[in-house]
Length: 431
Image (tube, rainbow, N blue to C red; front, side):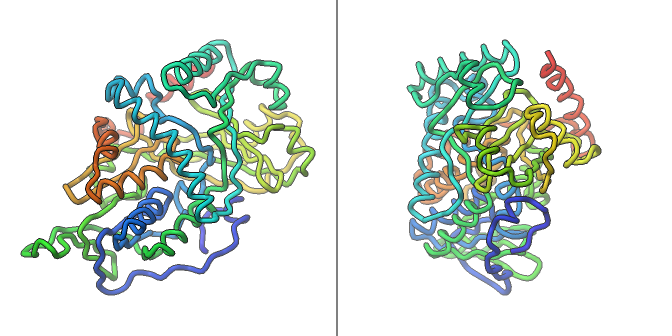
């Protein structure tokens, strides 16, 4: 397995046999584009429904965000339920919440059913740095318990929090036993292997360049043609799951997302005793600043810590040094600890931070814009897409009804405009 980043995820994954490059002319029922969790889940669920699914990945399986992320599996969507209700109404917002909870169950089911060894651990915490944030967390607990009946979420008061997270930085938090964390690259590779066992065909280093509609075809013949540099795929439907990496393949989709760079470091092995003392319940933890810090223990007793974003798309400060500095603010007791791995990647965000599902044409579907909430939601998104292609479109269309606008500024100015807009939220973190 080839990977361009020096991540702990790659280092701790046993190299798998490379998959073939697509060559020649092929025919399939559905051409899936993108080999992350969304694409692999789509291919798996389609194959289990009896469809011929062919997946094209431009690099290798898990090369993008799915194999690099902070890997915290959590409820809801990135924009939050209050914003979601303004976008789709209370009824659909509730359905999306329920499907996000279902996504967590589906993830554990897929891990168990397909024997995916991905270091899954139950439990996730959000933590507050200031009273305003503590009030926000208490409101979230009240809403999810009272309105949504989600009883696995509870408040963690200050004294208990100090016994769970060895940092003076936080004043209160929440704990959700339905959420969790895992090794995202192993999980993605496990989904790909399961899809292949179910009958899907996967090709790596096979970038989809464009598609076209075929003319003069019969009703039973494939109506779409996907082209790579060296091959073609005739198909009846296309599933676009490339997110921030689709690029010029679908320009209308690219205008509605933007790739934000985010960074993670992994310490040297700390030993079981020292690592356990940092997070005694082994939960994944994230604060609720706009520019968040998030961290968790690894299976080999490291601390994995993410804590920077670059809306400009460049990394002027140096990933390792700047992210380590954020880690030391949280855990000053790690000042003598070496950073062994540092890596980054792109998270695709939408303007409203809600996921973006829909159709470019009646038989060309897409999933994108998970905005940092993708580790569980991408899995059920693939299942919903397989349902839609097979004729049951109701659940997919709940997400498709969310309206999305292009990022302002066009190709040239939209990133500078985003950088300026984010300054307000960075300042708010300080208040």
